[in-house]
Length: 534
Ligand code: FAD
Ligand code: DLZ
Ligand code: SF4
Image 1 (cartoon, rainbow, N blue to C red):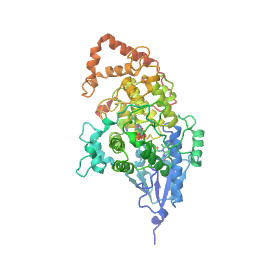
Image 2: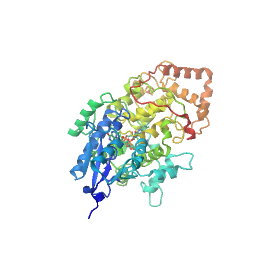
Image 3: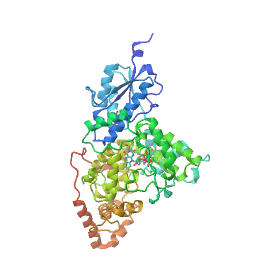
Image 4: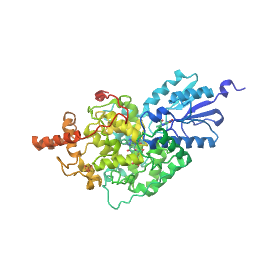
């Protein structure tokens, strides 16, 4: 005879970025014995004012995933945002579902973000049933393994981590334990500036179906004041669509992905990038499957080694490293501000209204697509925020709001540690600071800009030029002893007082023209300059 508790189901809550059939909490479960809970939650939709495309993407992908599970015979309890009793929070929704279903156990996979995991950690005391919290094994490096790797190291060099991961997974490895092709890294072949005849193909855009159109209407109604345009919404919202997007990348773009990884062209929003981060982060694509596919493409001679290695390094290396770094440094990473940057985020990050053509184009792409590619996020938008000394909390909020692939676990280390050096140099060995020269070399932006990259100070000078020296001068005490950047101060000293003053005055004059964004745009809290000691 089955006991009462055997007849009670297991409740499996699934978050909006856990849309994977093989999720640890679903593995081994039987359909008649399980209730899956999915909920559109006000707290998640509004803890920052996400880009409209990001909310549509997540709601539509959640609704499609629930539909597929139901069609497959699973019992899915789906709470829509507009349901009258919507509890707003994850814990609130699970509490209500426990009342409805009286489960014998709640089985949940840990959340991607620290704040939600804090809430989940309270469930065993809060709820009157068993609670099992499972690690998210969709990632290739468990959090505990990253911790063991990171402990006792002064510098968490990504390249060292990446080599360990190559050995561990066998990706791009020869039988003798050496890397395929003899080198670990082909980055030197991956810095080609753009060419006129590059001719990048269009990525597939997926026409919104009825479910997506309903989500678009919902977002236009409830989140009308959020940043971004919905006109070009075409993100994959199902695994099938995500696989089609991956097929297109492997067929049409991987060959040139490597060489043009750092190139930027006005109005060319995708170039040869995979555009797969939204699908990876939602759980529609599996990172190991993508890496294996790239490895196979090389072995089948369908893609060159520098492109394949570059792509695998982004996913097996950077993506996993960034996630490990996040959990290793939370929660203090959120408030880190080692360079004591206090300036408010300029309003143009929201409006795109600036004469700096590079920034205007990156912000336009961000608004239209909820996407910008890596080098735009790093060397244009990020470089400006670093040089101008923008407060890390405001920059974090901006990046978390504006990109459809943004979740704190991936956004925060990239923003705080990679672009702003706010962690005092744990992630990056030197700040990614650059003058207009770098952008001029890697893009076609400067050709038609109001400013000139070759003019260093005064009227018409590219603002990145004086800002670069303004930054270097401001942080001399910290950076002069850095072996990767310290030698630059000899150039500064050679300029002499008058020239130095011209640079500093030019920078200050430019900074005085920046209008700060108003409080309506995002949340804002105090920062902490003690990250060095953390
Ligand atoms: P591709 O250029 O095709 O690269 C392939 C994949 O590699 C990406 O899909 C992504 O999953 C992974 N990847 C590459 N670089 C990184 C990286 N630095 N960190 C983590 N994964 C990486 N990526 C996000 O997914 N979410 C974010 O919120 C995010 N914020 C960023 C903020 C800043 C300041 C910077 C510099 C980078 C950020 N990135 C973020 C990383 C990177 O810019 C995006 O992953 C990439 O632009 C997505 O486009 P794609 O899929 O075409 O990438
Ligand atoms: C980002 C997001 C948004 C906008 N909305 C929801 C939602 O309504 N329901 C949900 O389950 N998840 C949502 N998410 C994703 C969560 O914020 C994400 O799971 C956490 O940030 C952890 O990574
Ligand atoms: Fe950007 Fe300076 Fe080039 Fe203008 S001149 S596009 S501001 S780098």
